[in-house]
Length: 85
Length: 224
Image 1 (tube, rainbow over the protein chains, first blue to last red):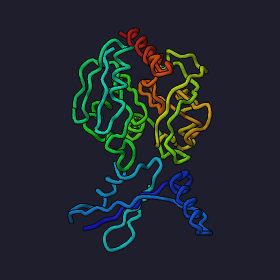
Image 2 (image 1 turned 135 degrees about the vertical axis):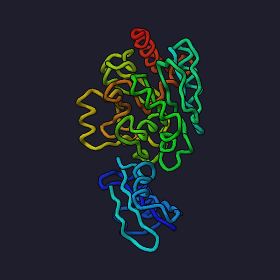
Image 3 (image 1 turned 180 degrees about the horizontal axis):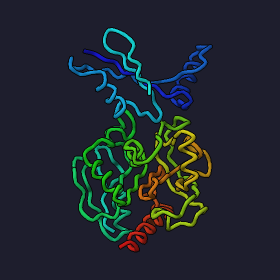
Image 4 (image 1 turned 90 degrees about the horizontal axis):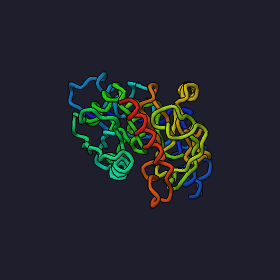
C-alpha cells in the first residue's frame, strides 16, 4: 500500500530554494511566477496493518521537522488525511 | 579534561576537533562511533563535530539525531555533562531537540566559507568563560545550512535568558537575529555554526577558538 507524505515549509518560513527556483524561471523568460515554495514528496510502501496513527508518528519523529515544516499524509487511492502540524 | 568526539558516517571535522581537544585539554579524546550505545565513563565533555552526517539526507542532522549513540548523549546532557555541537553538530542537537529551533538552507543559497566576526553575547557559561561578554572574535564558517530559525517566542526567550552565546556581526546566512550559537536552559549544551576547532593554533591563521576550549578546561577543573 503506497502512502504519500508531502512535507512543506510552514507559512512565513522563508524558502531560499523556492526563491532561487523562481529566479531561474524568470531567467528562462517565464513571466508571472509570483512565488515558488519547494517541498518534499516521500512515498512509503506500507504493509496493510500499518495504521494512520503510525504514519503520523513517523512524520512527527522523522519525516518532517515540525519546528519549520508541515506534513500532509495522502493515503493510497485518494486524498484527505490532513496531518498538518 | 576527559572528552569524547562522536563520529558519524560523513563527519569530517572529527579529527580537527580531536586535535584541538588534545592540544588544549592535554588529553586525546575518545572517538566514539555512532553505533555505540554507551559512552566512556566520567566524561567532562562530549563534542559533536562538523561534517555531513548521513550525507545530510532528509535534513541536515536528522538521521544522526536518531542514531544509537545519541540516546547516551541525551542522558549525559541531562546529567550536566558539557555537550558542544559545532556546525553539523549544532544541526544534530536541534534535530535531537536538545536545543530549540532549526537550521535551514542559507538565506542566500550559497555555501558560506569564510572567516566571520562574531560578538560573544554571554560569557557566563562554561563554553564562553574564556571570553569577555561583548568581545568581538573571528572564527571560520563553512556551511550550507546555517540559517538559524525559531518562532518569535522562542527567540525572545533565548535572548531574555541570555542563551544567545554568539552573534554574527553582520548578516551572513539569513539567521534570525544573526544568531550564531545558543545554549540550552541549563547552560551545558552549546550549538554553534562557526568552527572554534579550526582556530586554535598560529598555523590556522587565527587562534580565537582556542579560548573556548581553555575556558571549558578551566570550568571543568573548577568543578572537579
